[in-house]
Image 1: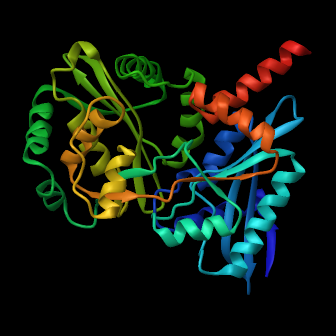
Image 2: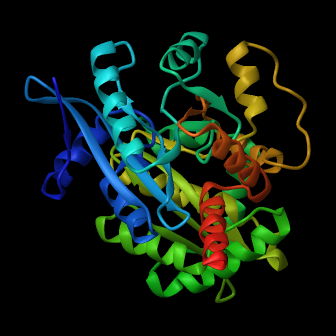
Image 3: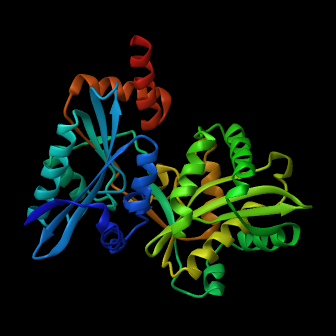
Length: 364
C-alpha cells in the first residue's frame, strides 16, 4: 500500500475518485481546491493506492499564518476512506499528519462525510482527534431524493411549499444568470446578510468561486425578476451525483413575494436534469439532527439562528442527516487555544487566518 501526492495531470482521476463517494463533496473536488489556492491556501492532494486502485484520499488545505511561521490545516468534507479499513486509514492519516507538520500546522481540522454514531465518534477519538464546536460545513441538513420524477418530488413537499412555488412563478420570472449578474447577486446577498445577521465574504470571493466552478458546469446562478428588476438570486452547485445550495439572497423590499420557493425549485430541477440523485438543502439547526438521530421528538421551533431557515427548508421534505461533525488533531496546544478563541469571536477559519496575517504585518 502506497500513499501518493496527486499531480495536476491526474485531476480527472481525482474527481472520479471523489465522485464515487456519497454525500455532497464539492469541497473535495479539484476545482474547489484550485479556487482555494487562488484565495491563498496551499493545496495538497493525497491518495492511498492498493493494488493499483485508490482506496482513500484527502484534499488538504493549508493556510499560511503569521507570514508562514505557522499554518492551519483543513480537510473539508473529508478525508475519504472506509473507516473500517484500518490499514488504509492509518496510511492516509499518517500522510496527512506528515504534510501538516512539515508546514508547521497548529492543528488539523477535518469534517468527514460520516453520519453520526457513537461508534464513529469513538473511532475518531482512537486516532487522536478531539471533537470541535467550530465547523465550516453544516453538521445537520436535509437531503431530498431526486430519483423519482418531478411530480413525485413535488408530492413529498408540504402543500404550502407547493402552493408558494406556484404563486411565486405567477409573480416572478425565473431565469439563468451569468457572470455579469454577480454584482446584483452580491447586493442581494448583502441585504439578506444584514437582515438575518450573518457574515458574508468579499465580492472577490464569490467572483473567484464562480470563475473556478462555472466553466466546469459545477454552479448555476438563478435569478427571480419582478417587473423587470432582479429581486432574488440563488446559487446551487453540483458534484458527481449530488447537488446543494451554496448561497442565496433576496430583496427586503419584496419579501412578501414568494421568491425563494421557485428559485429553490429551479435549482432542484437543474440538479435532476444533470443526473443528480440527491439535493442537499445545506444546513439546519444541529438540535434537529441530534433529536432525529436519538429518536426523540423534534424540539419546538425556535427563533434566531437557523430556525427561520429550517422552517423554510423543511417544506421541501427530505431526510434529516446528522453528520459526526468537526474534529481537530492538535500539534501546538497553546496556539490552538488562541486560534479557537479568535475563531469564536470572528466566526470563521478564514477570518482568524486573515487576522493573524494582519497582526504580524503590523509588527513588521
